[in-house]
Image (cartoon, rainbow, N blue to C red; front, side, top):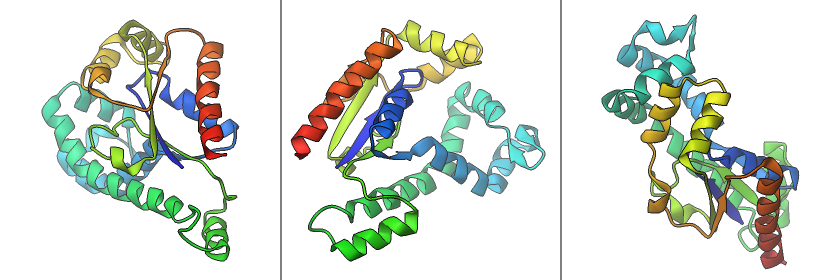
Length: 212
């Protein structure tokens, strides 16, 4: 199964994904894919935003984020540079895992594909992706989990992680509201870490039992 886990910044989405990884799922982290694409597109980014957003030869992601989340036009500019390649790479990785589904290929081919990635075969793949609905890629997944949280909790988490209040508000403001998203499971993350893990475990058990 290919499970998409989504949610706004500060919702706790990636924490939920970390639980699934601990319990045995393979994970595709779209943020990490995006960082790779960012490095590949350095020349285009330099042309669009100037040298001031670079630390030496590396893009200063914090400074770039501060600029684009404060200006919708600049955010659209960055998205136009990064998103096409990012979506293409994500689609490629999701497709490679789908080849491992029973009936899609024989055991020898499945084993070879797995070894090429340096991974063991897994029956569950979790995709950590904040923009599933914005990109309209819901059909790529067998199931979708939406992690939600109150505005004040998201804001506090971002500030605690090092963002200024303005940076945190800018990032939350540009995202699609949760009420516009439809998911198979919803996890409300407005309590503590232990409760979040318990709620994630219930969904994990439900997924595993369906597969059995």
